[in-house]
Length: 433
Image (tube, rainbow, N blue to C red):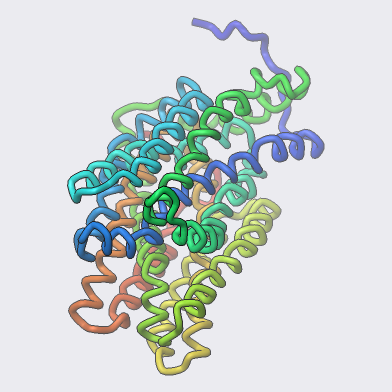
């Protein structure tokens, strides 16, 4: 069946004013949504001490509940991204946010270990597809030259969540309204924004440029023409052969290694500072946030330069190599406080800055439904590193009574991921399934 819309004029460049309008309309809002999502994901680490005290959970049970989030997360990743590409982004995002907001608030009602496990699995399923769905959604609105900066604007929510979450949680955990413990109020109050903004998202977001009433018809045509021109030589169709695509699985492994190191470092950082530097709780909290403050600015700088130069591979690999260097320095700097802090700050500086270039690389190989499925596949399997990293760090520390072996493992993961990135093609190229 032919497309009933009239042919669009061939356009290969967007006016700067139009690019700015699209960015200001979408990026601050998507940043806020991702910030809410990540706050709901990390609030468990702040609530854990109170839950263990009040409910009698031990550290192993608590950690297992943190990890099984990703079992639910993997289960619906690809279907959610397909819905955003094939059906409706605003409907899919709205439903996901309301669902996970209710479940996040429902953590305040947990009284048993089984209830804790079930809500964590369901919460992972509810959030499945949100981040990769946003990655796919950005391809509906941003040309290849702006894509790294658009992804960076969204990714800035990750370090911001660590910065904001710590201070917000310290206030909420002191609440004891209506006889409820502070950790219950933490889940209840931090789950509500997802419900509210889930409803707002249905009205604020627009699925495709041709539906955007806030753009002039000529601007809609220009934008769709550029995006159509860029994707003309990319695989658009999904086939089951995509599961045998070597490049996609190569990127799955890269992302798994990077996420393993990211979660392994991030979730254990306060504990490592306590064990290796013997900081007080206040000092430990301050130093735990500093790496993410620097990561915030690094994301802006590296993504801007990647879009300016059009280069993706080295802008992805170099942060991974820097992170590996920082972790390696930490192994030898345990006895020297200044070097230890420098090493951890370097890791935090590099931790999330690989992501805009990484996802922009994928958009050079695939488009349309093929890209949606590939993003879901890479993100779902790659995020299993969120279970593997913290588990491996804890196991190695338990067996060696030191974090040195764990730091070496995480450094090896980042170094291997960086090296693998350099084997990806540097130019736009078809990736046949």
